[in-house]
Image 1 (cartoon, rainbow, N blue to C red):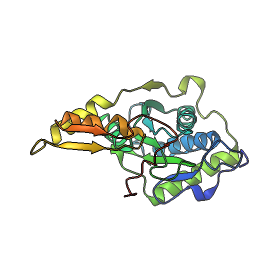
Image 2 (image 1 turned 90 degrees about the vertical axis):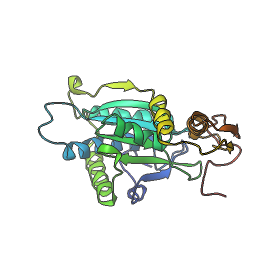
Image 3 (image 1 turned 30 degrees about the horizontal axis):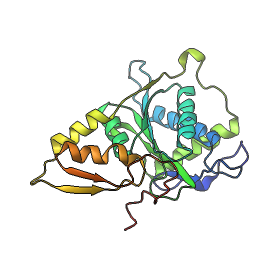
Image 4 (image 1 turned 120 degrees about the vertical axis):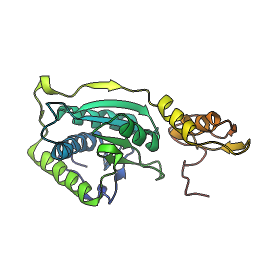
Length: 237
């Protein structure tokens, strides 16, 4: 894909998704991710109250462990920061954990870099606004329009160097697991087989069930980006 274009069909009803394998004809590239970061920042600025006292917007970014997710997360974060947004990196994080962190931490928005259950050659972005509310179809289309406008204008630093967003990291698992432990109880002892398919749920699923007191037997609980045993797809019985 040429570096000055963004394929319109990657903008779906509720997420952004396309081919991303590190190949020349990829639809989701680092260039695409940077554009989407800038466009999301622009959209969140449209939503933000005018009287926020000069506070910069804050966005949390989590990712799955697909082979391209780390580089896409970095490029997306660079785009957000270039548009004056502070970014907190969650690192490897299942989408529900990212959503919880956005809500619990009072972030202005967030992104989960993932293609969910889709085949390994895909990747994408789940975009969220305040209180971890997913962007709806009209909002996705607005982000698309902003991304196309930025691409046409050419990539430049939107913020002066002093106004670039800050970057930090958050270790989100302890608050998330504690929330689950407080909200749920087991009526009786359970022995549970858990299969996260070598995906990022490895980091949360077994640990959450153990926190509830379950006896957990894990299958495919080593993090492996290529998912050699099977795709971590809960829709596949």
